[in-house]
Each structure stands twice: as structure tokens, then as C-alpha cells.
Amino acid sequence: MGAAIVDGGGRLLAAQRAEPPELAGGWELPGGKVDPGEDEHTALLRECQEELGVVIKVGERVGGDWGLTGGYVLRVWLAEIVEGRPEAREHLELRWLHDHELYDVPWLPADLPIVRAVQGLLNGGQGRFNED
Image 1 (cartoon, helix red, strand yellow):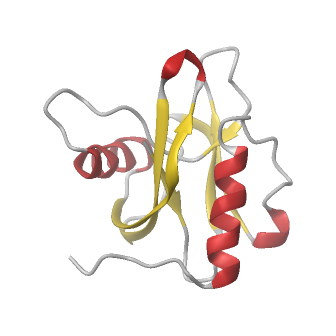
Image 2: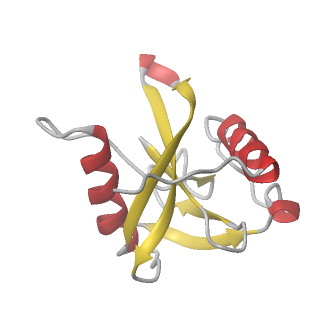
């Protein structure tokens, strides 16, 4: 699962992969796998804490299941940071991208349609966050 982390200025957080070698240098949304016994939201909170050193608030889901190679699926939620400042703990670099900069980085192919969907939500002002 992944987090489309946006800030109050409408910027999206992009993360540059460090590994594996075949994906290194490509850009993605932060996130990772759900551990056994973990629900998706808990896993997303944990992944953002581990990868970025931040606490997030999870918002609405972006699209449905995004297909990945090997029969895996990626589920993505809008998110905002409620505590901390993102650090590239497991990535080569992090960047906050404004709408007009979204395609200035080479997104991994699996993330590109998700970035387009997030852009549509942000441009339409439809991004919402849960109140819990």
C-alpha cells in the first residue's frame, strides 16, 4: 500500500527508490507491504514512520486496486503529515512536487497512473481526510 502525502500547499511527496537495483533511481509514493496480522491503515502508518520518520493522517482512498507485476496490487490513500518532517531514511531523495512539477521526475511505471489520479483529486479539490 502507498501514501499520496500532500501538504497544505497542494504539493505531493515523491520518494526516489534506493533498491532493488532494477528500480533504483525511479520515483514512487512512500509505502510498503502489510505485515501478517496488520490492517492496511496500521501498515501505512508504520511504513511512513519507518521510511520517513513522520506520523500521518490517512484520508480517502485513491482509485481501486492498482495492478503490479507478479499479481500484486497496490492500494493508495491520500495522507497528510501531522507530526514530524520527512527524512529519506530508506530512499535516495525526497521531493515535494507542485502540480506543474509532478512529471519532472521519472516515476516508476506502476506509480504513474496513481500520480495522475492524485493530480485529478487535488485539482478538483476533492481530497478529503478522515476526522479520527
